[in-house]
Amino acid sequence: MNPDVAADLKDLSGTLENIEAVADLPALRAEIADLSDQAGQPDLWNDPAAAQRVTSRLAHAQGDLRRLEELRRRLEDLPVLYELAEDESDESAIADADAERVKLREDVSALEVRTLLSGEYDPREALVTIRAEAGGVDAADFAEMLMRMYLRWAERHGYSTDVYDTSYAEEAGIKSATFQVHAPFAYGTLSVEQGTHRLVRISPFDNQGRRQTSFAGVEVAPVVESSDEVEIDEKELRVDVYRSSGPGGQGVNTTDSAVRLTHLPTGIVVSCQNERSQLQNKASAMMVLQAKLLERRRQEERAKMDALKDTGSSWGNQMRSYVLHPYQMVKDLRTDYEVGNPAAVLDGDLDGFIDAGIRWRRSQGADN
Image 1: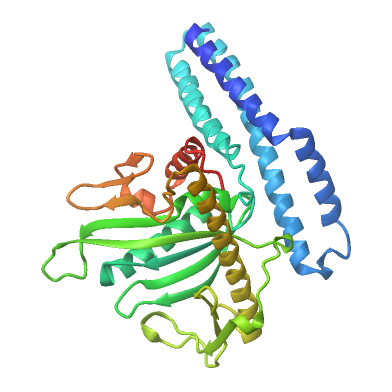
Image 2 (image 1 turned 120 degrees about the horizontal axis):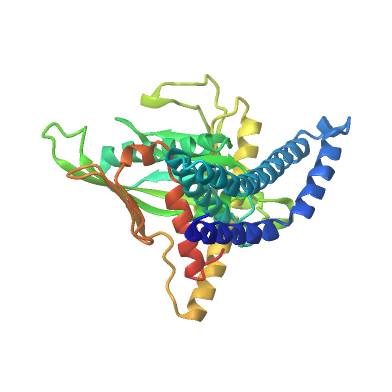
């Protein structure tokens, strides 16, 4: 075997061993066995929320183990592929083995990023809120593009999502939207997407065809768990009920079932209109409010640490540009990672940006 190829395979094996050590395969297999036992209990669905947590965690743990075992199998197969190709002097087979080695490195690198998620809330599911900012109707349209981008990203990975509230803009797009991504480590993964996103394009809403710059903000919060102690005093809440509406103001519900909660001490406002009953919408809105309060507390603690270290936090700053005219490029302003295919990115091809963001955050010492 070519010495360079042998050295690369040895390096890949070392990286994979580190990932396997962090994942703790014996503990992962034990967890799967325990969760499988819980999932097989006849009374599991007496508590649907707990059952959902068990089955979701089991599916993802099995997926993690399957990915690790598949990578190890592919790595062990590669020397055999090279040996067979070289024995037969088959240039085409050597090229196929080289392509598999490149792909394997990409897949190992992507999994390695997960091992960098060590913040307190990183293993949680995520609540994502997108808001149109400066730029009028273009900003509202851009906010809807970003929402679709993240939902497509989740779909590509097989993660389920729940949209809790969508506030539609009058002409096009959305004023804001909040949705949950159901996957372990969704918060740690998506938290690097937080900040202001900028779009530069020829506006489809400008009859003179002028170039327009618009902005949308992305907030990411960890889903609250029972151990978090995020208490909300009902006296500090203003509860408004209203009728759900769809795009262009059309009614989608004939009763006042949508709920808006205002947390008076902080001014945080959340809404939920995706359920049929007012009670269900209020429960979902309370969950979203708790998550936002938890994220606020985390950021306040982080700000104190930043002040002690005398370094500024970059959260909330402009972090990515999507340029559709006069050239095609998406560039992350923190990591300098860029691609020349905005259409693919806006269709959910985000992993390169997310991986670069997680590595950048670790290099800044900016764990959650």
